[in-house]
Structure formats: structure tokens, C-alpha cells
Image (tube, rainbow, N blue to C red; front, side):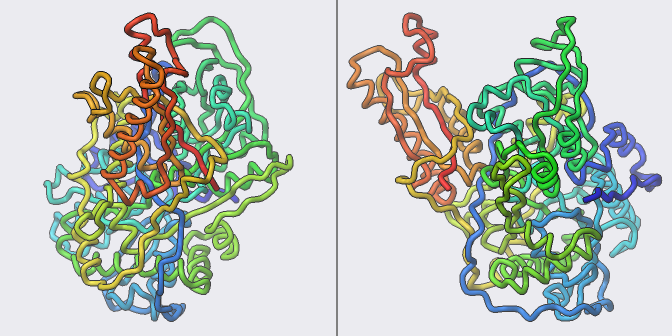
Length: 605
């Protein structure tokens, strides 16, 4: 499949030129296809901070859903003011597309029934998205109630929203605080199609990835998957795509996800200067691509044209990482609340229809082919669910996979606890964690990002939920504690402080527990093992019991913090006492390292 991208706009409204000059300096390629991280700032190799992100369950039945008559093809509500929404090709939006019935809302569509004359526009360039929102806000500031310039709304990935909104709002806030862009809802999630692919040995033993060369778009959503996996396994990342660090994971920068797959298929190689701990050694290394970060159809291309790679980690395990998020200008949305709530209601009912009725899924796939301008309806329907296929070298690989949301799913995603007891704000975790990833690795480009409270408004969703009455169920995870792990994803130690000789948390524990919570809440597809360890002080039998009590204390804390995200059977406890030291017990420092809780993430399916 060819990447079809809209060229970067050459013009921009005068009021935003200064701010967008800074954005242009980031040199975001049109090939990023909506992945939203800024330009280059090279630093020494580093272990990425563990990516603390939210959890989402496997797609499951919504419950009884009354079938909505399929929308027609003719325009349905052209007499209403047009609402433009820019988005890129992504199956998580299939419920939204079904609700529209076509590139413009059609007769009998859910959108027209709710008074929304929606126009869907494919836009793969995030810089152009920001320009169009700023153009819209500027016209709004000039007195237009429903501007014809720019776009009313955009849809992007949640894990790129901190950077996207920071750059956009730097411009919009010059118009006034009421013009700030905000997130209001979500149509669905990536659920497997976005992935980090590598040799099977990397999955079996993460340390063997040291010195690997991975092709992909830097600072994008799929790059994030690799960063999260590295952080969990305490492995380092080399952010400089022009050097080679034999102790870390290295990168071949590509302008798009298809090009990343093509680089692997072509066995691309480069001669690079060798670095260790950020310093050049004077050596040169010829490195060849042996891994990829990509999404469908890139993963299909890798499997069919060369093969040999498996999914190391993906949004099937890191299910909370990539929610689609809907963003608009605060002033316009508040002035047109009925329209915004109508759009959200139609979109989320469309999600229920797609989940419950094969005919709705097929109709949504037809609209996808129309809006995205490529591939067939059969293609979008096939890879919506995700498949497992044999690759060119005989390996079985997972390809594709997205999910769509209903009202209850959005309440869980945004942590609306008054309507979804036990929910955690999964979006806030995603937004915050990946905002920190960018600030840590590219501090000169993105020195800060706004608190999530400034860019999230759930009032529209709450109103929709309260009016909808009896809602279909959210897609919450289920686990069985008796099912062993089939595959380990990551393993890492956490120095959670406890009172001496007790299972009571120490003073430093809350911060570490909060970080652990965010780390685990994104990995909703993964079972969690908590392994308790002690130093050698005291009697071995007592140490074994203490390690078990401490592991159970962490388990109970997680489950009480968010029962929906840590259901019965997800968290398992193992006690090891003093039997597995990682350092010498002869020193105080060694004993401190041995007093630890080890967290293992794995899949049981």
C-alpha cells in the first residue's frame, strides 16, 4: 500500500505565523501519519523511563444492542451547518465512520439523526492539523460563529497528544485562554496493529536486542511502544540515529511506517561511528536493520515480503497506549455544545453498532475505503479484527487489530468515576507518561507540557452518558489466575519502601506505587506477576513469609486503587524470600538492592 499524504500547507493565517514558525522548525515529516513527536535533539544513550500507561480490555460483546438501519449513500442533512473533522486512516475510527455513513453525513445516518452535518477529511500531516485548527480559531476570534476556514475538530493518537497540544496551544493561547484546544472524547483504540517487531530471540530474551537496529519513525506512537518495552526491561535507547551503540537499541529513521517496513524488506545497512555512553570510540560498525516499529499495513508487508520478525510488544498488550482522541477549540465547542454532544453520541452508538452487528462493520469498512481513498472495504474489515498469518519464513505472526468504543468505554478511558465506579483516568496516564518521554529525550524542543486538567473536558461525554439511559457494557478485562503465562513481555525491579521487617509501606512508597500503577494500567492485555524478595537478614523462613506479605500488600493496593483495571485474577503473587539476591548481602547497598518487588508482565492467551 502506498502512503498517500497531504502536502504541508504553504500558507497560514497571520496571527499564528510566529508560533507556527517554531512548529515548522520541528521538521515533522508528512509521512508521520499523525504520529506527533517533534524534531531532532540528539543525546547520549539512555534507559527510557518506564512508560506508565493505561489499560484497555479486549474487545468483547456490548450486550443487547438494537440494530440501527444502515445509513444510505445520499447526503442527509446538508441544510445544517457543516462540521469538519480531520483524521488519518485508522481502523479505531470505524464506528465514527459508520455513524457518518460516508465522507459527508448521509441520509439515515446516526450523525444526521443527531443534527450533525459531519464532513470527514483525511489529513495525515499533524502540522497541517494544527494549522487548520489555528486558522479556525482565528476566524472564530474575528467574529465568525461557524468559520469556513480550517477545521472544527481533529482526531489523533492519545500518546502523542501532550506534544501536539503543547505546540498547538502555544499558538492558540495568544488569541485568549478560551481558545485553548481540548480533548473531549474517543472513538476507539489501536489493539494490536501498532507494534514493535524483532527477531524471536528478542522476545525470548530482551537483553539480546542490545546492538539491534530498528527502522521506524522517531518519536512517534510505535517508537513509544519500543521505548516502553525498553524501560520495563531496563534496557537503554540510543536516540541519535546517526551513531551505533552496541549496548543499546539503535534507530534507522524513516519518513513513514511503510518506509520502515521497506527498509527491513530491503535489508538496509549503514556504516556508523560507534559510541559508548554517549562518546565516540573511533570505531565504525556496519549495522543492518533487524527490527521495525510500524502499523498495518507495514506489519503485513514485513510478514509477506521477507518475514522472520515477530511482535515483541504491541498495543494488544499495551492496550491503553493508543486511544483515538477527539480535539477541538474550547470556545467553539462550548458555544455549540448540542452539536458536539450529538457528534459524540452518534460516534459512540456507531461503536456499539460495529461491535454488535456484522452488517454495520461491513458498512463502516465501506465508508473507510471512501474516506481514506485506498484499499478495499474487505481489507479494512479483515484487519479491523486482527488476524494471525504465516509469514514468508514460516513464523506465525499477528497482524492488524483495532477496537471501537461505546459510551461506557469512554467513561472508563477518561476516569469518570461518578458514572463508572472504580475507573482510572487512562487517558491522563497516557498523556502524562509520553509527555515525559519527549521532555526527557528532547528537552530543548519540548521543555514542558500542560497538566492534563488544562486540556481535558469530559462534560460533553458526561451529558451524553446521562441522557443515554441504559448503556451497553464497557469492555473490561477478565483474567484467570490459574492460567500460566504463555509469553513474558517484560521484567523489572521496583524498590518500593517498606517499614523494617514489616509489610507496611514506607514514606517513599507512595510515589513509587503511583508510578507502578501508571506503568501497569496501560498494559491491560497483560497479566501481572508480583515477585517478593528480601535480603539475608533474619531467618530464611521468616524472610519467605515477609516477601509474600509485601507482594500481597502491593497487590491489594493496586486492586483497591482501580478494581476495573485490576480485576480478580489479573495480579498473581510469588514469594522468594532471600533465595534470589541480585547483589551481595555483605554490604548495606547490596542488601537494599535485594529488598525489592519484581514485576513481570506476560500474556496468557
